[in-house]
Image (cartoon, rainbow, N blue to C red):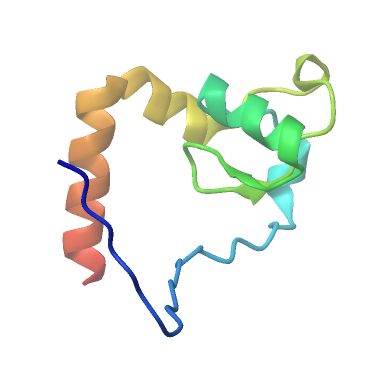
Length: 95
């Protein structure tokens, strides 16, 4: 059995995309931890990425030439479950 559906009119589909603005400041002195797939995505699209510490930027320099961000290192050392708890607790205290 084949079903034919006819539609008329216009449909609007909204997509919410967060507007990330690159950071400035002391974060530029460090190399940051970011998920590998996000680095690749950023390299291919030129879109900003977000480090564990919250820094938003478009990676474009050799991270081996800079010391690791202390905040990123601390969060990395917590592991995924530790980071999730940290961010959940932080959201509660800020909200």
